[in-house]
Structure formats: structure tokens, C-alpha cells
Length: 431
Image (cartoon, rainbow, N blue to C red):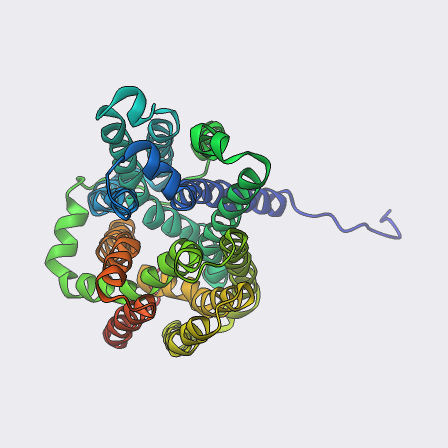
């Protein structure tokens, strides 16, 4: 006899898939956020790090050295992108993601635990620079591998949703970095903050590292190739050389926008227009929160409904570029905390809206067997050329020109280069 009523039963396979996808998103996003968190914290505490590790007898010398140390980590990104990206294409995405988080923990430990220059002399800046190099090597392979893994872990119809967590995790890192700096600055006296308080965020990130390592070790693999490690690099240079070059140029503008607006502008506004220090933290929190909300909205309701990736990337890039000059001019004319927050919110909101589609555009342009290497190489070279040293470049240019609009000019030039390259980059939907 059949039952008069039946309760719908969710298939076990569906529940397992949902659990697996949630675990994939958390593990990949959390690891990526942890890596970006360390970069963010270093940026916010650059002044203190400069005093502790680079005692140069000039007003701008220590800061320039600290910013150069921030940038030197990016020198290793291309190498990390090629080595770890090809490792991901050969041994699998999971193996590469596990490797990147180990390297990041090692670099973070060196920065967070190294004694100051006053305690161990020249060895102090050397060890800190070594830590930044390890972080750079890790980050060079992290973004390409993590984005590829997110894309391949979801169905074709939900790729945008999956990849949107790449930008969302960067927003989380920016928000937590700014919030931790704000809290420590508020609760600790300046002497304590400069002597040991600035180390706490690095130690916090170091403690979370083993959790990310454990979760990543238990992810489901999406791709593994039997090819030799150098196969992906050789194939890219043989068959996709021009696409790689154009891809690097397309990322120059977005990465400059990220590192200027999120990492540089808050401190720059305080130093140049003498806004209260709290303005720096509020602007950092605003940029991080904007990235989180916009990435989530784009991933849930926009990206996967669009037939093509390039139009929204081009439109949002152009709009954010058009906003740069008038917004910076407004800040120059009438500097205030509200104006600063408005600038980072508007520009980062527009930029983030198209970034997930941008990552998909780049990733889908290459076959799966070389995809992680391609994205890692494009991203790491583009970030290194104009992103990592953006703060140093703008600081140097502003000191030599005396023009407070220097960040705006820098963003306009790099943005124009990317728009021209984007027009030439091919769009396709790879498997």
C-alpha cells in the first residue's frame, strides 16, 4: 500500500555537493583573505615598521624604504606565479594551494617575530625583506591557482558566483586589516603600539594559517595533469605569447586602482591633507566593506546572467577611470573624512563590480591544462610592474613634483593602458 502523503527527501548527493562547494569556497577564500590580510597590515603599519627596521637619517627615507620593502615582495610574484602555477597545472590545484599557505605562514612568521634594528642590527631589515620575498612568492601563485580552483569547482552557469569570492576575500582582508589597525591604535599607547602592538595582527594571521592548511589538504581536486612541469610554460610561450602580453597590460589598471585606493590613499590623505588618523582607518574599512558587498551582489545576481564578460569589464573600468580626476580634485579642494570615504567607496565599488568578470575573462581564455599558469603569470607580472610598487612610485613622484594630484595622474595613465589592452583581449568560454 502506498502512503497517502510523502515528505520530499533531499538527495544525499545534493547535500554532499552543497557541502563540498561551501567547503571549497571557505577554504579558498579564507586562505586568500589570510594572505591579503598580511599585505594589508604591513601597509597600515608601514610607518612603525620603518622606524623599527629602517633607521635612516632623513624625513622621507624610512617611509620610502618601508614602502620599497612592501613592494619588494612583488618582485617574487612572477617567479611564484610561474613555478606554483605550473605546479598547479601538473600536480593539481589542491597541492598548489597547500604549498602557498605554507610559504605565506613562513613569511608572516619572519615579519612578525623578527627583533628590531636596535636589537640585532642589520640582520633585522634583511630578515624582514626575506619574509616579504616569501610572501610574494606565495601570493604569486595564490591568486591564479585559487581563482582557477573556484572557477573549476562550480558549474558553467555559476562560475561568476564562485569567482566572486576571490574579490570578496580581498575585501574581507582590507576590512579586517583596517579594523585591527584602528583597534590597536585606539587601545594601545603609542609606545606600546610601536614596540610590540603592531606585531599582533601578524601573529593572529600566523595562528590561523594551520586551520587553512588543514582545510585545503582535504579539498576535492579539480584537475591534475601528467605533463611535465615545464610543459605549461612552454605551451604558453609557444601558442599564447601575445595573449599573455595583452593580459598583463589589461591588469595594470585594476591592480593600480586596488593598491592606490585601498592601501595607499588612507595614509596619503592623512600625510598630505592632515586629516585625522581615524580617517585612514575609516577609509580602509569603507573600501573593504564596499568590495565585500559589491562582489557578493555581482556574484549572486549579475555576472552569471550576462552573455559576455568583456562589456561589463570595459564599462566599469571606464566609469571608475572617469571618476578619478573629479573625485581627487574634490578632495584636493576641500579635504575631509567624508570626501575621502566617498572617493574610495565610489571608485572601489565600480572597480569591484567588474573584477570578477575580469578574472573569468582571463581564465576562460586559456585551456584547462595551462589555465593556472596563465592566470598566475598574467596577474603576478601585472601586479609587480604597477601594483606592488604603486605606493613607492606615487610617493616618489609626489615628492619630486609637489603635486597632490599625483595619485590621480598615476591611475589615469595605468587605467588608459588597460582599457586599450582590454579592447584587444579575446573573449571565449573555455571548458
